[in-house]
Length: 164
Image (cartoon, rainbow, N blue to C red; front, side, top):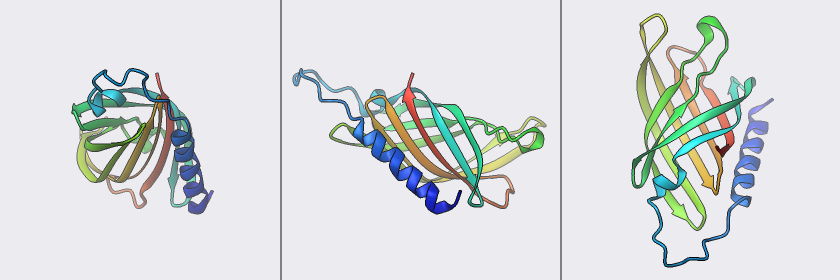
């Protein structure tokens, strides 16, 4: 699958999420929960990982979203299992800023750098960049690029899921 197809899939996934918007509450006097509280939870769905314009992984995964502040979230990206030494452990992304427009909540983050201990006790750096996450009702769609350790190529990931 080429990058053009990944972009088409990403746009279709985001259109799906936006199209699944729920209607606004009939009780306009009720205070609205902090935007981060509205989206915190576990989301299960399809994750597609592309490496060097080739599909590397297409699996059902669960992403964990937690409230960091009223207007930001942290996200745990699940492990990518390529087998043995090719397994990339789960990584955290912190401080994803949220905005709300109607029934859609959008999170963006240009770049996040972290390090994680591997199974052998060594530490590897990772970078998450160009992260966009859209929430609409119980649906989520996210895209991001991940650079892990000294891998020569970025992992280009698209995830679409539903809140458990």
